Image 1 (spheres, helix red, strand yellow):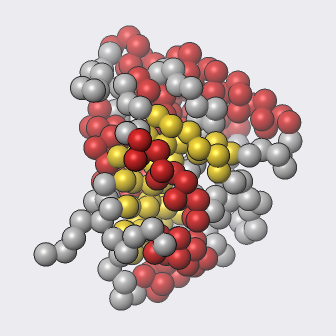
Image 2 (image 1 turned 180 degrees about the vertical axis):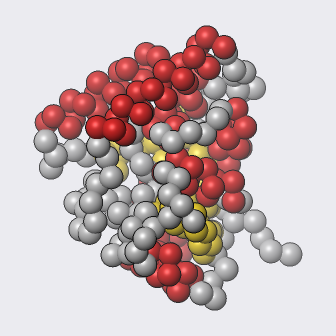
Length: 242
């Protein structure tokens, strides 16, 4: 009987042909130092370059790597949701495909689970980035914490997080997954009563490709925030059992 993975790493990717092979190499290298019992799930989100073909080629013959392709772009949140639904690991890690986060720091995300935490959030070092970006992050964190679940973490929008699998399954079951919901996962976990830890992670310069954020995405994220506020604060949803 095939043993259930201890760790699942979910990587959404859109037009990351220059990064995806290195993402897989580094992630495999990092996970092998932790356990041989892992899986990597790549969700190609309707890329119009060679992301899917490169990932599929690298995965050939290795049952620990799963590559799924969305025929049309659905966005990061729904790509994560596709990967989360497939994840079988006790711990599920989400990580971007642009190599701004180091797969070798997955180990750092895992440590707090030994102390009973349910969710671990990455806290990025913004040292090399503009002060305006740090200010926007602080405003965002304050607003979302005020409207949704309050948490003590400093970097709600970090794309490097880890969850116990039962937490992920609960989030999928309790909330409607629209594009942008991945930005509010920590707040929703806080609202549901889960124990959340935060660890420092490196933020590396993107070598290939372009950032996919813009004003339209910011506006859509704000509208989703209001919808989630309506659900958790007005309509209500059940808290975690403990």
